[in-house]
Length: 241
Image (tube, rainbow, N blue to C red; front, side):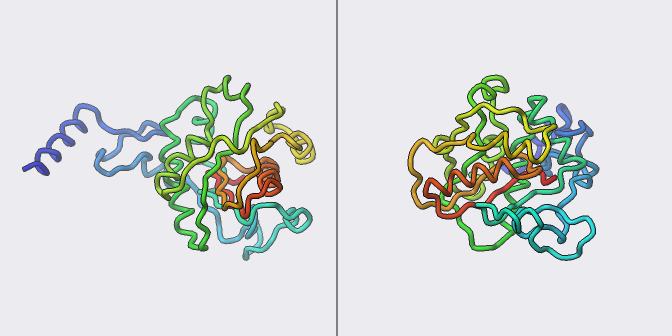
């Protein structure tokens, strides 16, 4: 009887408050589908192709295999691998932009769940001790009111059963926004921008960010963590440009 009541209640809610896509607003079939995005928006979320750098996940537009890219060969990063929910195009780009710049915090959970599924499906034996979201400078955090990387990390932590640490890694230097800067400027802009509040234990860390473009942000975060005593770092981002 309780099951029947729940089904009738859900149907009534759908009738009065029909569920809609969090991204485009298109009506969904039913809230019981537990979907946050419509079929069209899901179809526009492009996964990484098999041809990408096996370390930083940079897509290879013309290659047919995954090998190390030129950047990782010249400057081996402190992280071992990057997981990405998809290419930073289409619906993923739109969703991240709305989360980051339009205060659409409801998008953080489904994006985090999408990324969490990718991480869980990797099966590379890496079990992190902690999840660390890329921190914002306190000034930027006050302006925005939230850290989008932390909001994406929450459902991943819940899914994987791994605690989040928001205290160890800090953004100690206010930097210019990376958007619009060249690769060289991005590298210079972030140099020594992060610090550790204490010596890090020999942990395995999963570093979370929303977008990875040139990779300088997660490179600098990883360098700081590794220098502070962290044993191994893997990175996970929603969108890989």
